[in-house]
Length: 388
Image 1 (cartoon, rainbow, N blue to C red):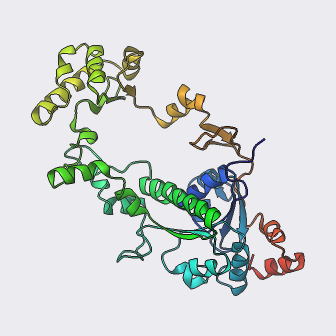
Image 2 (cartoon, rainbow, N blue to C red):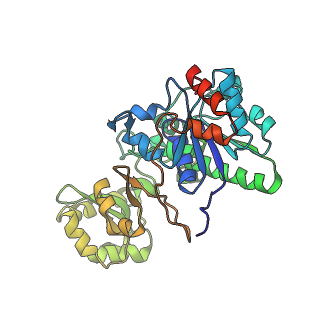
Image 3 (cartoon, rainbow, N blue to C red):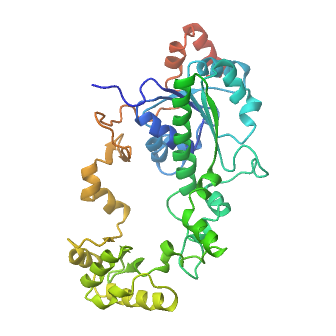
């Protein structure tokens, strides 16, 4: 049996809520030893968000599996000393404080680099470690707003729509952070020198807004909401309501797909009206809307079955979980009394498993300190004093 992809990589995780914990979740699922460090008084706010079991919410349990838990008071000198001692042997440190807080606590990049020059130290924040907004509070919706992305989400003539998918938190705070961390770890393994990885969730969203930037480059301004090529402006790339109030997603961008789509709809004459714009696009969309409204979603699914043209049903989350393709990929896992997601990456000779439930507050404190060489009597004293 081969080791897991990230076996032997140790991560000190100081993050809370969604972005950082999901970044370290991906690392933990791939074999990294992730130590979740929480304040003795407050801890991770995610523990109490939403309906939970006992003290821990389902939200917390889903994104903190396969991690160990350490309770540590970083406002006490002894707590800082313990952290730096653990950091000496860590490969990664991840924090999501406001810029400057980690430095004031004595656990910032320079302090950690002084004891471990090969560390990959990642700071996740809404706006980055510099710039006039660096100290501002914010959440996903704020970052989407500042990145100009929220302006582009929603129907033509309507208000911006709030997606039930935290784009900035997950694209920026989680995936971008994980990418930066792994790049820094690879370099450290090669050179012995670490990096400070500065992740701004606002930057990460804006840096992926390629189609909005394409329009800015070509026309000098962005398209109005719901009218750009891939946001509703094209009849061949749109969502249509069906007779039962459900929807079909039409993404027939290529001429061959559009031709087939129109044939299945019984309107082959529309095949020549593909990448149309303006009033003609509105007219074709109206014709397709009328056609899709004549049958239920599942009836359309049956009619399009076997037609290679990128026309598919819009599923609910529950339907997606039960979908045959999702099931075949093994993306859904039942663990800890919850329906969870397996990692979205598949590796050869690696079978994902939830081998550890999300930790209780400080569940592994003594175990972690014993591994670091602390005396059992000192551990008991630190626990009694409230440092652990």
